[in-house]
Length: 490
Image (tube, rainbow, N blue to C red; front, top):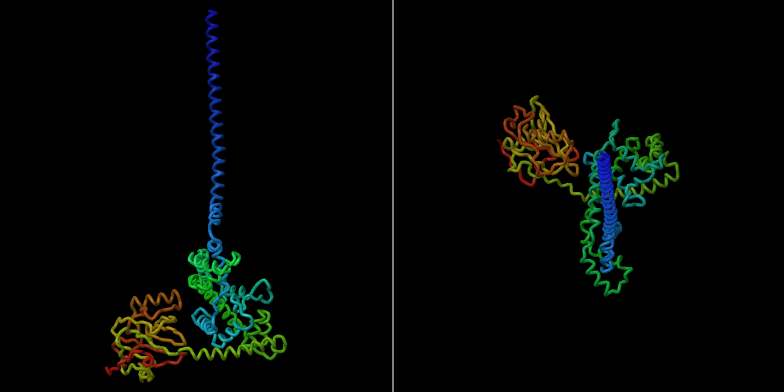
């Protein structure tokens, strides 16, 4: 029995030692697997780092290698085209003529988003813009410090006035945000265009010239820039875009300059001498001059200001004479386009200046012309312009539209039909305010709205009542049409 127990004990010990050995072998094998994975992970990480490093430097290495095989002129074309284009655009700014600047000031002053100042103030601003040293970036001297706050410029102060605040100050103008957005878009396009390399045919052609002329490698960049200037068509798109950017910058500064003049007038500077002090001395100078209330003689006591004003006044007088000369060249002729797109005819009692009698027996002169047309006939503007009013007058014009054109011309269209075209026009006016309309766009349709006296020979048929005026004075439309209007008795 003892022998049997010994054998059983030995078997149990043997099986335990086997299990321990197996467990140790499993642990050793597991450690080997972990070591292999750690080894692979380390080598994989090192390989990945090497790959990243190689990819990072391979492009530069390839470029450096290719650069060795390219000509110096070709390297300049590929690497410095943006700098060369920028330098050319900066060195050749497009000069704005005096007449163009005058037209812009007048346009922005009368587009329903400007102050609406008189012509005298337009001339003053033009003289101010051309007085003294004139820089492209600051034509209207808006970057000078604002009095009382050296960290703020006139541009900053005026721009703050145009922003909408909780308390509306009457100077809010949404056109400035539109200009800023447009400038951002144009500058993004310009950046893309500048990054594009110059055409290769330029360097190929210039390479032949440099060999013949014996130009040194140090002068190649200057030679390429001069060659691009000679072939200006190469940068046609860049130049056109730069002109658009400059035009927007001029528009922004002209509007700010007009606002400065407007605020000065509202502060009580009636005379140009006081207004000049406001424009030069800032708000403090304006506050001092506002106490004078136009007494320019007191203002002239200070010698330095007196001398500055005298210099500016001579320039202003010269500019006023030049503006007068340029204004005579403006074409005041206003040719009316056919507003109905059909043969124009009218009754004799509907001609301009005809004696009429209203429902109250009052005799008056007819201030327009009544053009016969079928009910619902499309009505077009006689010329492009700003639709300044769309409304209804029960005791007169009925549904009528007023359009403001260039050079002080205004046209009025009356007795229009109340249909979907009219309602759409009315909704647009209420939504947008004054808006621009081309001559080919349908304005409304012919109708019989408004007051047409029953005892009038005009009663009972649809017609378009058309009035034309210039600077408030009514003019016979018959004299302005290309077509001849046929007058009938019935």
